[in-house]
Length: 112
Length: 116
Image 1 (tube, each protein chain N blue to C red):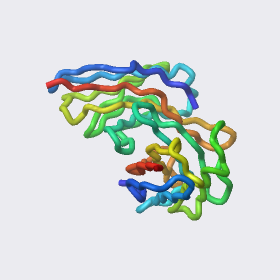
Image 2 (cartoon, rainbow over the protein chains, first blue to last red):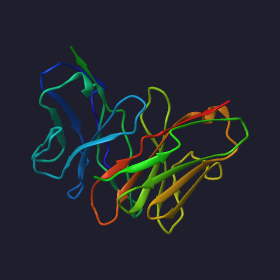
Image 3 (cartoon, chains in turn green, red):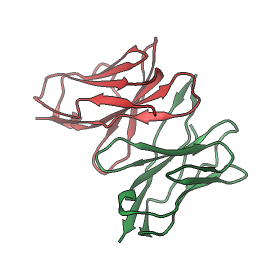
Image 4 (cartoon, each protein chain N blue to C red):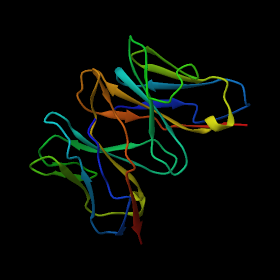
């Protein structure tokens, strides 16, 4: 699976947009980018995923660069409940099966 | 949406005993399931990948005889921590992927294991 790189931490003021970047320069043409978040002591929660087009759902927007080597997760109006660790993941084939590994993620702190 | 139920949510056991953790996909069939371990303030570490109908594939450094994984059916996977020791105390999380979908990994709520 493609390696991803994220900043270790970010702060965002409540009500403002939170923009979380992710580099995945080794991504291959048919690999999706997934975003999850983990609130303390809970299982990761799916946020959004995409292949090459920008995506939007009720939680967030995902902007993928044209070369697909990086992406940005956008939380349009961050709330205190959005404080969590956000993971960008690119699962890939590994010996015939998909493998999902986590990097260190970005710890987002939403500030009142 | 897809739901993965993990049970128990927490367990305390004595050193030397075995503990079984269950992971069930409630409304979908899962060909592939993943087991992770997470220590405090660290990221999730993949322990093993199991595909229904075949043996689990363990990550380097994970003892297959200590962490027994059984993908019994398309809706159930179990992780058994055998002869548990205090250093096995951790947060264990499972994940499942729906049959026929090229995307969508759903995670369980995790199991907090404390070995005393």
